[in-house]
Image (cartoon, rainbow, N blue to C red; front, side, top):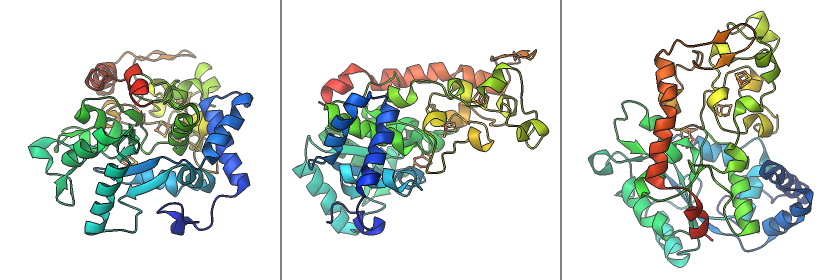
Length: 357
Ligand code: FSX
Ligand code: SF4
Ligand code: F3S
């Protein structure tokens, strides 16, 4: 059964076992009680799959790679089974005028019903000339497509907040989708994001006919409601003052806390330790590297240098409070201001849920 444009690449469809496994993972991430799981499975199995138009702008395509080519085939397959991926510039077979025709046709035929997924930031400087597809700027495309959609999902930190392109000095004036549109969007940040955050959001939408609850930055609370630091398996070491002093030392080998070698888990809202990545169940800190805060707005500026410790964190075990507000500190302290600015720009909140029912 040719159900979407990616079918040929992935081979035969999802097995029943894989389908249920993917649903169970999404249900766990969403924090659903056992009684609600059959409802989610039923919604996922429904033949009414929402049409998805997936736009690519300034990015590395890691979000698509992470989602669809994950070494977690069940997740990738399930995502493709519950949506109708009608336009996706990276994976579609169509090219040139034919591709542009498909886009036009889909947004006309599915107006008010399709989901617009945006991957990548949008350059706004000099009329947006730094990213063009089919003769139109990213700015023109997103302003044409997004208002016709039932919901807009920004996938990855680039689409959510500008990402690496928006890092100082942001030569192309790159911005996130919500800021460019001046209206609420669902942000699924991460560089790249965990596929479960996207899958859970779509399944929530299909099951309950509304988007999941969002935080003030438009991020689904089920995935971004808690700090990595509060769910980290190394947290006991932090609390007891046992730290890696430098990469490769004895404490690193023992799996101690990575705070002193730059981990930004204490200021990063994500569920990486709980959900982990791929079939092998790893996440950066689990693999011995500090979190660099990739789900946070402007983390390239605010969380770097990545190997310097966060200031202003109470360090147990005699370490005291790191008060030397060096460059990292000043930038980290700026996170709240930046976040508040974005919030004001996109006005995320209840309106989104209401508007997309
Ligand atoms: Fe950005 Fe997506 Fe980072 Fe890349 O395409 S969030 S650069 S991993 O993957 O947009
Ligand atoms: Fe885990 Fe990093 Fe927090 Fe240490 S600082 S407990 S490694 S999240
Ligand atoms: Fe990103 Fe930190 Fe998770 S770097 S992938 S939010 S551990």
